[in-house]
Length: 359
Image 1 (tube, one colour):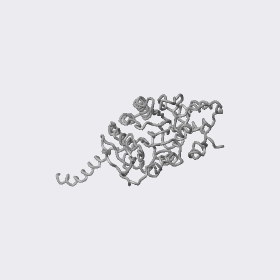
Image 2: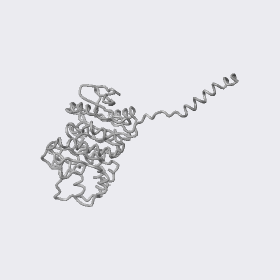
Image 3: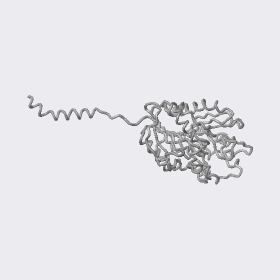
Image 4: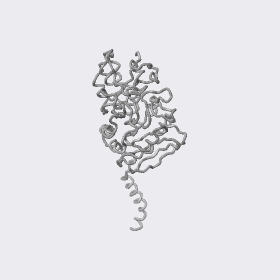
């Protein structure tokens, strides 16, 4: 009998191993949400970048979320790293001459972040200088300002992000809350959070906003992030730099653009637009979209569906009241002396091509 059992022992061992393997389920390496913060700091914000990274290290990140940082600054090689329990964990080092405003590099960093930290949801925070939809001349940039000479156009930014299934883009930068940027990005992400005005140098309070941004319900997380940013930054900037942020549903941009094109009324002759800057040339380039949209009789439901939430301080530098602040801005050349649709690359934008085409 012992001899008989020994003959079948290898087979029994194999069957037991197969049964065990069948029961084993490998752990899922995919987390719930990965957020990549893309910091272009080869400019006069270099010191602010280090301050914000220190805030990020203090943030409490849930175990089922990951926080990755791409940091490009003066005099050192750009790097991609993860923040884990307050420490920097290096993931990738790039040659020092690598440009953060090169669309190919931007796309490569996003791809690497998703490879290192696969997730069911992806968020992207863009940190640097910016100036809305403007794309030319040099020093007037869409996103980023590298060594006072290089920038990335909004069109290039949108092309670089498309295809990565980004759930939200947050601009911790100036003037990006315009209809032209939102329309350009409509196929690049689900949501956009941005400011129609300047953004304080200290930017978002990351130690407080990042935990909120990681909460399970994405829309609620984005709204809470806006509220925390306003609660902390607005009182500190009373009489100073404005604090404005809005949540935009990019999937509604096509319907909103069509509503603008179908609006029944001409803009009244006595219309006085709300501007969002006291500085040249920005005071002539960014006006309140909602005020304009209501004046031309746009469908209110289309606007409500696109602009989900907004918060704004009462004034700009204490001198310009924000009587109108819908959450989006728009360029109106009628109120821009010396500018036209060819200024600063406007005629290359998708918004211009759709709204002002004759088809």
